[in-house]
Length: 238
Image (cartoon, rainbow, N blue to C red; front, side, top):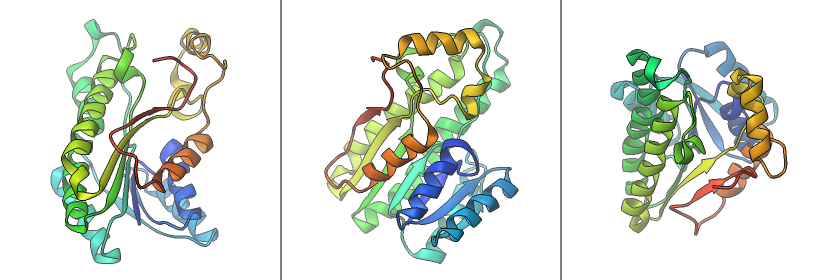
């Protein structure tokens, strides 16, 4: 079974739906978008899959504990975690409000820490599991106007590699996926000059789609010999 954080919309939704179609029982995590999460569950169930929705503020360790306990009470084990929940509050570094900094870091990175630590313990006991974090090329190269987001994703990449080293002896695979520029979802918030610059950097002059990225994640979830890797899913050079 699989836990997908931030599964009520965008890339998280596509991942949850494709995992459900691939035979995974799916926990659809959401923070505030309950109605959207319920629609994802109905989509999975109409396709013959199994899912339930689970709210949690990932910044709150007790909320994450409740999410994991609910999952184990329902299905006894956790085979896959995909951590893609996040928020964006862009702004130039010199003008960035402290609240915008803290919220982005807390959701992406602290929330990732809470999920990995709690679910990692479950997988260590199982002696099996796979964790994927959704990173960003911004965490490697930085991006003007995204100090908080880039710092959070850089930290998430580092957290992923540490977990892969520590949990490899327990047959737990931990990988980070960089989905590339997604014109839908958060990508729509970029200004036209920013979008044009991204397309100029891309060798194929196009972005990714959530369906393409979700399909790749489903394929990666089936591997038993890959861990500690950083996968860039677009045509920008890093």
